[in-house]
Amino acid sequence: MSWHQAENILIPLQLLLAMLGMGATLGLKEFLQVMRHPAGVGIGLGLQWIAVPLLGLLWGQLFALAPGWALGLVLVAVTPGGAFSNLLTFIARGHVPLSISVTLMATLSCVFTAPLLLRLMAAGCVPASFVFPVRPIIFEVTLYLLLPLALGMATYRYLRRYAATLSKLAIWTSLTLVLVIAGGALTTGRIEVAAFGWRPPLQILAFALVNHLLAAEVCHLLGRTDDETVALSIEVSVRNGGVGLLLLQFFFTGQPEQNHALYTILLYTGLQVWVPVPAIIRHRLGRSPLWLRAPRRAHQ
Image (cartoon, rainbow, N blue to C red; front, side, top):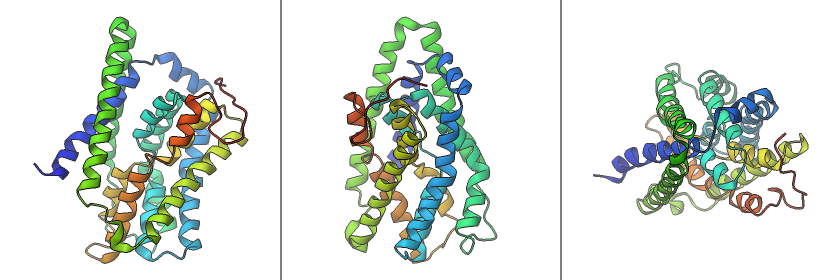
């Protein structure tokens, strides 16, 4: 079995276990609370569909990126937040129901928002044959997010005595799979930094850092608690690389520019795991996820 085939098994399994484990710690009332105070979800979606795409567009213009590199950032920017953000928020002890709610709503709404943003941001690159892959997105949301989350929440509701054990087992297995997947990606040569020099990876890393830090500052300025701020800044930082790769197949087919865009998506997907780590550590220690800030921990 090739590593690519193994990834096709391990990545979905990791998502299933993560959502199952988090669901086993949550009740329906936590999500109802999010819906009763929807400002956090609104801010998260606004960051997803306005702030991040604008930053991606400005980044390409600021550094005068060639078409392939610019398209790669655009594809990163228009994709929804990835489900891995929920696991990172759980590890950070952030507002997990808010994180999951934004992930679900952003992923479902990307069926409409992503094609619109692509035509606005990359009009010259969108081919006439472009059709957004609706079915794979709906399948992913249902199978890898909704079903395991619902099963975990049902365990928490009806089999409370087993919920904590199930959560720990699923979460720790999920984290182990993350390490296996990351290690495999690094040793298969899918991302060869030396192939294009150091400028592209530095630009992509800088974009990821600025994206994360600006999101956290906006959340703080809008009065979000630290629990919400760490959840939303992680949600904005962690993009759904799988959706980006699905979209990439329509652009620059067989041309070198497609390799540049592919490199951008893969490298960002690898870096995004590490960018929120300082904020995660600070929040777990009871400090603000932003430097030199007093904590505001309670949910609003």
